[in-house]
Image 1 (spheres, helix red, strand yellow):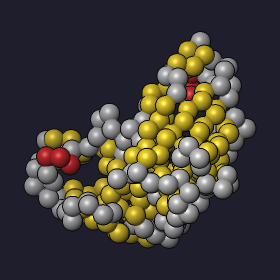
Image 2 (cartoon, chains in turn cyan, green):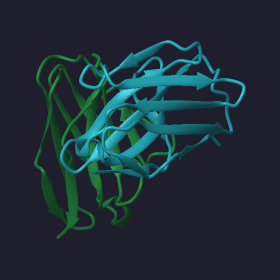
Image 3 (tube, chains in turn yellow, red):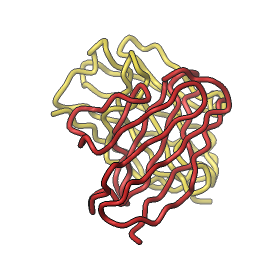
Length: 120
Length: 107
């Protein structure tokens, strides 16, 4: 059974960079049927798609965050990562990693989520 | 961006009731739509994809319909484990976007 697990600091100082990693187990990140995704959820903005990365390194980012987002993939470790720079209070949220299907563009497996707080 | 509007924002229902949730897209998305269920403290779970296709392992009391801009999620006979918040997601255009959610509460 596929399992995704987020890891990283749960407290980030304002103006600094948020960094999270999602480790995939029970399946290969090189499965060409899927993209790997970051999504966040906050009371104010609901569920927000941050971006996708393919095992080849191809990425799609939400234009609203594009200037601050960077995603990377490490196929040798079967994990992918998110970096969000210049964070502010509005970036406080639960961050989920997930898998997106290549054909129907839906998210069929999710990590449990990690709550990240931006502190001033 | 395509805006997804769900209605109602909350519904009170009893076990055994039929529940219908609506989702409207700000522009046509064909059948590129997914529905998710989320319980408190948990990640969303995919129920329906391509507007009407049931994800593996999801009970048949869940069904989806619609195309273009108007979509519906129906729970034919509400069970205790179905009390949760439901979200739609458009899968037609980047950026991928979600509706604001519909909370199904116990009457």
